[in-house]
Amino acid sequence: MMDGFRSLFASPEKPCGVGLVLREGTDGSLFVAEVIPDGPAELAGCIAVGDVLYEVNGANVYRVDARRVAAAVLGPEGTRVRLAFKRGARYADDRPFAVDLTRRFVHGAGKLELLPA
Image (tube, rainbow, N blue to C red; front, top):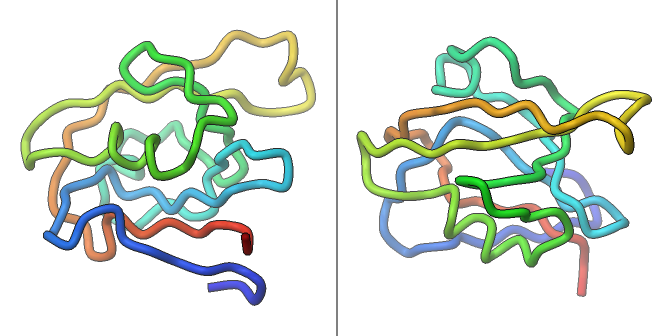
């Protein structure tokens, strides 16, 4: 974990996720900081470090509280979630691209990296 960040778990149980480490940017958006090897996101093959999470199951989550976003992304093993991201220099003009992922146990699922309060 980078200096200046604190972490927390969205749930005390072992939540199931999609194999992404999301980091809160200084503007309040959540971006992909890491794609976990062999996780659902890596296996999808189209999510990259730096992509900004924009929607979860069709709901806009841009600049929404990270805890609420984590609660929406995490869920029971074997259930599906649709995430939509924006990427690149034409970020403001491009429509989000969506990826359907199946949640499964991923070591560290539910860990959030937030800017200090």
